[in-house]
Image (cartoon, helix red, strand yellow):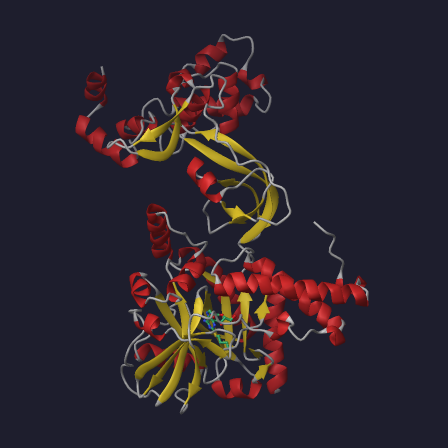
Length: 566
Ligand code: IVH
């Protein structure tokens, strides 16, 4: 990677060159994002480029280019839709990335309005990660719907927007202005996104990188019949042109939008002062993994609309609102290796070993690649720069490689044909009952494969099975390697064998008298367990906890079960 100089160290010539390069680079990203719905960098990286551009411009204002990325909101419309001029521009929001930024926002509002320490109320609303749309209603009837476009002129997608069940064709209730542009976010829920991509895989058509791109791609279809088949949803949160005011506060406005038949985010809150802003962010962070749709931050808005008008706008964003963004959940790093893991039932999972990278505040070194087909489909190769994504508690995933022109890549990854265990048993592609091939590959070694045996042992002692404390992964592997525990039954003879052994467990590395005593006690305590746990602990394929309980009930007791097995 080329060295990135601090802005303060740039000469004027270097600054001009950097601005030219950033303008090109950002224009390319805008094109891929807005017109092709297929971004090649994460939002965080995009934001970082934009920030650097602004910092350089702040230091060298006379170098600001005519086509400067800081002058643009969104990107040009695609040619395929007719242009629609918005009644009032659709602006964007300034970003806050920290608590300090949020406190400073509150302070700025107070300074501007000369409020001192009078209480200031704000709304804190989830920042929905979709695409914004503007809906023009005349006498309560939907007459036009548009995308944001460049903020001034958007794309006419009226017919497509009409297919959304959550966009009323007619406003309900009363009190709506004769003309109003209702604004909000078109988005796709997680489950609908997953189903859409699964169907695309099945049909062999393109998949989308994330719910936002899927929502954008689904809305920007020339044939509204296709849009109609996509379960797009809509949250209303703002408005543009109004023929008459309809509320005194943002909070009241949300309430009115709800009464007129729109969905508004149930997570929105009305809070007081800077403390309230911080608490709302913390609450939204907790809520985020439980939501059924993507959010990428919290939007703070001054509640009183008369104050909003006094605060007004600076260039392209309002002074009365700010978006507090969550830390990036995506990052780039190098795929250093692909390791093959063998599961308890022999299923083979490729695991990506990554150059450590912080994603959303957590260091990520491993990510799942699911299976051989997935690697081939994404065409990730060792040495590639890849985009890693972390969502909530799920295992980090690799979105795909970042392919840079002129950068040589390794050969396509060849999936192994044999188990990586010392026996090197051939792998078989699993078939369904009907004989169709599935994506799963398995080691055919079963109990001969030492990797599968260790996984079996881990399962056997796990919390929901025998629940033996003190037999962690490392200990178990060590005892297996030394031949002390080769199968589950060995666990129960460990103490007796240790008593007559010259090489005592307590003398092993990482062990001691107390831990060994505790381990023996833990084993002793599990000599008698429920039949369901026992059956589950055997780790038979397709026999999960629930099935084990059903089987245990069916057999009634250990005697019947053992007799049947014999
Ligand atoms: S208010 C004048 N509220 O974030 C700005 N925007 O970066 C009015 N967004 O273009 C926007 N959730 O696409 C607002 N609760 C929310 C939002 C929200 C998502 C998006 C919207 C906007 C972008 C600004």
